[in-house]
Image (tube, rainbow, N blue to C red):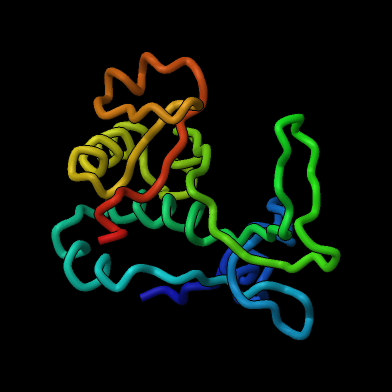
Length: 169
């Protein structure tokens, strides 16, 4: 049995530097004394308890990436309203910070393959299975759900992923 040495990526996770290519102010997790964010995010208990035993490996990996890219991101929002002209106006004199998660996120097929460590065919099959079961929803830029692989292939723009409504029940 050979000794396993941690990769640089594993070391980055241990040091709280995972996803260094992302904006530090919007990443998920808890801020430590060093200002870094903890390299974790919450996972629905239902996923672990009831859904995971029925998922294939690649399906679980794709599901986790979608959860990380949506619910795993905290976006700071102040108490601003948008006027019809698109300008921002404050609703009070003192801004308050609120954190919200992303509703959906653009994730390319190449990024899904890279983040899951799986091949293109396996990722495509996993996305098809997860959308058919309602665990994830894939949309075009206008928010129209793309339920079949044919619809997703015909979409010339970006594909946006979000957790399915089954997670809100």
